[in-house]
Length: 625
Image (cartoon, rainbow, N blue to C red; front, side):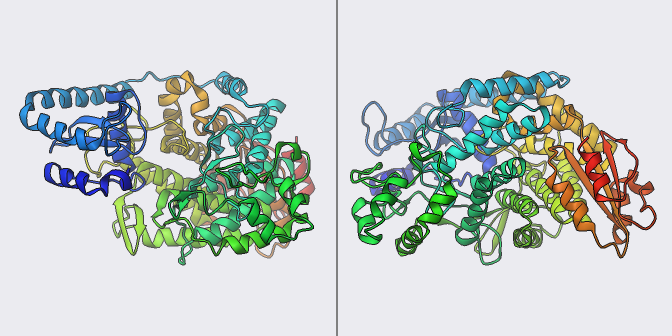
């Protein structure tokens, strides 16, 4: 629409003559995007991007739509016809404009009030079971995933199902999750040459992607593939996870160590041109002795599978072959294609640095570093986190949302605080540095101060110090990204279990309860919220590991805790130099001391504690029974 309409001189002349034009980056201002998307849905019954809103000087909309071509065609009005009509109506029929805008504003206020007046409900495990049944009804037995085309990765669905399987022994949930992860990695949505996942697939089989690569998708998928490895020990999932990291560190990492937003889908004006291969290219570039075998193994043909070219992938008939064996056999061919592809004109890099998306990658890197015992991953997560703390926090402590070309701006939204709290918890789990735990608590407290609805519960999307818009929404739906309210519920549930503080328990209970009715209506739309609910409805495991000075075998204890999977385990490491801070954060740890100068583990289930143990074998016995 930008090239077709906005950059057209005839359209631009009308826009500049009749309107004050404001282009909003929805990633920089998700608050504006969310409010006015609600307007579009209320006025037209549907939404989408690009989003077009026409409003008066008081920010009250009287017209909304999505895509408009330059010239009217096939029943869709073009801007050359539409814009003059809107300008005429605005000047000549002010009463009509006033009536429409007032109706829309009133509808938004009613919706906001309905959200606030939702009844409070007590959570029940039956909701989790019903969610799994709903996933099963929409599950694609052949290609995985939970919808027809287009298919989005939505990794939080997979994470919920994996956790559910671990907690209940539900093999169907486990199968759905693992098969979906494998199918995505076999599809064209996965870049087999340069790694990384595209944003979504346009078809059922994950073959033809929308070639845009997003930081948040790859962060969430890194978490999902890492968790799959942790629960299966299948090296396939580790391989994909590590390749995601390779892609992000190579192509989405700024010199400062933080992460850019995305790479576009098109280059040289053609979608996917950077990624696809014509058969003639493959025959010219690869060893003639192996080209036919390579093309068969990666689904390439003379006619191609995408506009005469080929998206390399794993054909369904090859799904039984271990991917690592195939990739190893053709490693030199893949390396050759990568070298050639690097000389092509790359898709545009969206070099914004968003606090929220960086937090997702920081947390995922820390998690992967802990599971795969990769200190470099943890160091990269630490470097990015340090940069965020140093560059995205104002002198008064207010977090900012976006950085670009030396300019940090826009007050952060609730999701920024929630995601950052989650990242800090992942960093703590990877390093047991108590300052990370303290910062998780601090960011959560600040989130409550700025966004919490004291009267009705739940977190508003933008802060009490933010720009006042037509409405102040609360988002709970978990779409391509988990909602800020769902992640906040998860963070509060973890802090509640880890620290035993009454304030976290009360906030968590209220946060879960206020959205429960909405989630009940369609639980599969709220996978991240369901993960938080698991922490409340199933027995949790709490471990305090006291490590005295001069202890030498702490690693064995920590590896035992990592390697034995419990989705709801919290571990606090208590070293002598950290006692003061840990006791402030988790007062119940005051009585936890080393026995006979040895490393001592205190294992509890939902805060019902067993006898302390001083050897790894004793720890393993307690956490496995």
